[in-house]
Length: 299
Ligand code: PAF
Image (cartoon, rainbow, N blue to C red; front, side, top):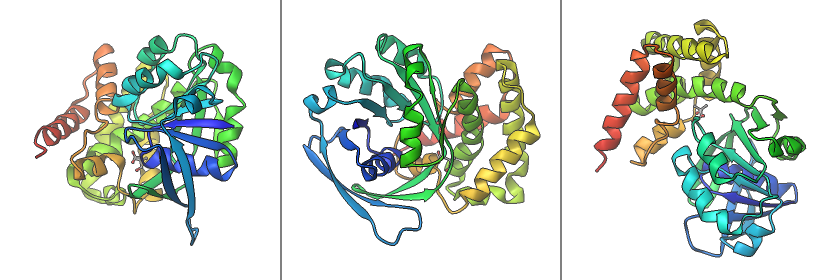
């Protein structure tokens, strides 16, 4: 297939290389203006990296794409779609994959005719240099439609699954999105505030804060209709903490590099929903404020 990837951060580069290895033609759409770029792609536990050269920023390639996969951060999604809109055919399915929630309404307004799908992934990747990425952990990816036209594209789950397993279709993509949001609410702000690896959160010092965050998320999820318990979310979070113990979370890396974080799409989205259901969320409010304070004090 001809696939355009919009945004080539760690997760975008991971998928670009994984899809290229399956023989798909990858075209990147990115901020840098170069017409080609080379990617060193290192698989999990693979001693040698694969090297790919991709064409970049070619409107004709974009308009001929069979799929567009958008992997920019949540706060960049609307602008990315506006950038590609002049060349995007309405029949082309668009998959949006980012941490956090809350972009769907605007995306559907911007793409009223395209099949629109969302994906949420727990695959882990580390960008080593600008053109180099390493796959650092396996986790599930879920794909699902957010409009009727998107529902015709369930086969895309097996395209993604062949490239980077496991990937499965979900009839209600919001369910796995909320599960991932819960993990991100717990891990991302705390690792960013304390500038530590995910594994550090398994220390007893963090037990009370993690429990408070999970309790508030569980109350909001239950109000939304995804009934769950504090213990379930806490256990799941601890499993991810252990599975990704050596990794730095995306928010830790954003703060370390003084980049804008995804706090508004993660904890901010949770707080909006808490407000809607008139639920108090003091632990999440506290970490949201701390991340905002860090961002406002970048050099
Ligand atoms: O954002 C991240 O870094 C990841 O989603 C997760 C699951 C927290 C692991 O690092």
